[in-house]
Image 1 (spheres, rainbow, N blue to C red):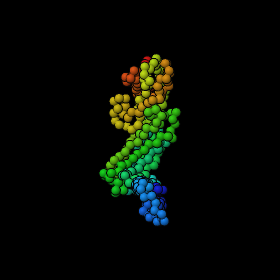
Image 2: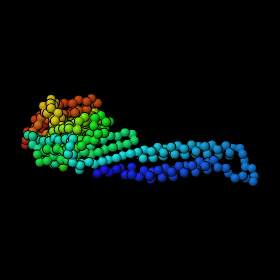
Image 3: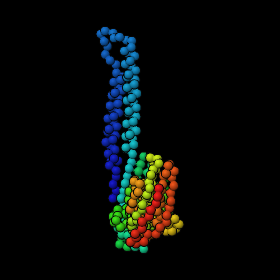
Image 4: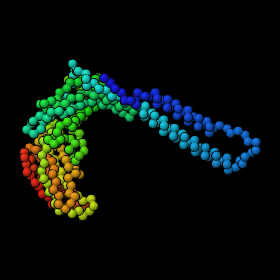
Length: 315
């Protein structure tokens, strides 16, 4: 079932508006060019005539500039935007497959994570989007969906396939979700594929969503020498797509990190509860900006279940 952008559906109204603007503008210009009736008595023909003429020329130039801006705006808003949704169409032959799994500590499955995929192509005047996949992981953490790629979407078409991951349905108290990465902003763990050559391609991805645990971190003796000095802790842990080898964390998954700009010293001595990935190798990163000089320190640490870890660092 296809649905179109509302702006595209009322192009006719835009052209009516354009005609109205043109008529109004032409009327204004005609008024500038119309002659005034003769006076019985000759007017003062010196400075008044010169001033009126300059004023009219200025007004005419302003109207022309405004008309040009209106025409450009109408041309842009009349450009094409089209969005299609083919997620209800079952692919029975020549199918491409998007599949994968969401896991957490000890390779346990993570159900109910949403996965969607679109084909997108755009330029300065048009935008086209076709939704191909809309599914979620099952009780075993698996997802699998077949879809059909059109002829004009195969190969190097100038478009791309956008895969989005939505973990908003899982328990934020149990797992480190994407909205916990880099402070409280959302970091997308989806990805893009810029070319699919063959229809029988299988796109298979495994994602890691860590279980959430907390440790205590003391940031002590914070005495800024300049107004922009700071003392901060961040945590880094396995998160996101399986990449093979992550030597930084000794993991097979990518790296997520949290705390950017949020876990900072405010007073002289500060006790912070920061979250980390349970049952995994983490890195505690301490940032200091002291008298305008930036330094950082990385402390590798394994976080066991039911940890009672408390760390202390001085400014």
